Image (tube, rainbow, N blue to C red):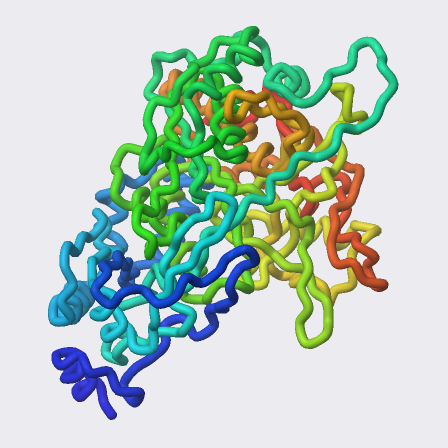
Length: 563
């Protein structure tokens, strides 16, 4: 049956199996632990669904990322505006017309395009959505620490074949909100000795990474930073004020967030949300800070996807964004993962620095046909973000050299090939590491991560007015590294230079200049006889556990200030 007869099916909205296709045939659907179904959703209830429309000129987009991010390029630092990006990737008029006509015929209401015209969000009743998305069946689920309610379909959906060249996927059907892997570890035992610290605080970070009291924002530049939360968690302004009262006395700082984007709930403060805000604002001290707070406003929306939509709808954004979200690569459909990667490319062309936590499962582990393999995380594995791993102090009570934090996520993507900027560094690691796991466990030709690291073990956080010690995870290292990059952006902006933008091409070209090399320790992986729980190990230079290492602020500032 040809495209012409399928187009007739568009008008009648009768999608037969012969002229339909599945945009996400490889999307896994398993109910995450701790979630339960509350049953089918009422047919008249309203849903908000997001349609990812097929973009244009993606090869040119990739070329522009390289051109504006590589210090050797004449276009270095000459970033695109949101309008430039829209002009480049905007779907064809045929795509927009075909999809909008299809949706209007189905009764869709309140449809809104983002500025780049490549995402369309519409309201439909459950009855309309199940007719439109053949096979879908909407259920309500509850789960997660915050007892979050979401609407999802446990069954795959199909679209008319005539839309195959126009729609990448429909958001809000399958993927569940992630859960936090942040942990409060037990306090290490030590005999009382003079000169010890009792956990990581802003002053410990500033001492380790060689920041002085003068290394703060000026408060006068057009500089800003942001963290994003997708866990139905909220920070409390009173917790931030108390944290700065307890731990911010020896450096200039701001005690309140400049802007909250999304909905700030009134429930208890979340540990992860509190950590992100408090350490981004104490590392990037005295710099204007935004918080993206669980921006998925409807139960059928995916919070991470909604954050990407916000980036495509705002022309003026903070320069640095730190994100602690991640999913297993193999749990996501190819259509979704490739489209999200394109959204990260769009951000890179605009000069946004996106930092993602590398995860807290070491190399990860899964079983495929009875054989164990490591399990990479996404977006940590995207070639277009800077991924941050984790370290611990060699002596947990002294400001000493750092070693690997055994939970630090890292490895090799099974989806994205190794980008050219890291070819030399990764080849060097693979040819020289004395502790490589068996080759069947990882894809040696894939994008390797993390790129950098920072302390991820033993933090103090104030949450619900209570100071909580020994909080650990790469959710801690990521805002710390992001805050320091914001301080470097401050110097660049005040001296008339553009912000750092996508850091990796420059980072790898400089081969770790300005970073403390972490050369001791391994992270965790599969608990079997073959690897006995050990993944990759750190060594001289770049490695897939701590990247190039942790920040030595004065040296990093010098390395990244010019041009």
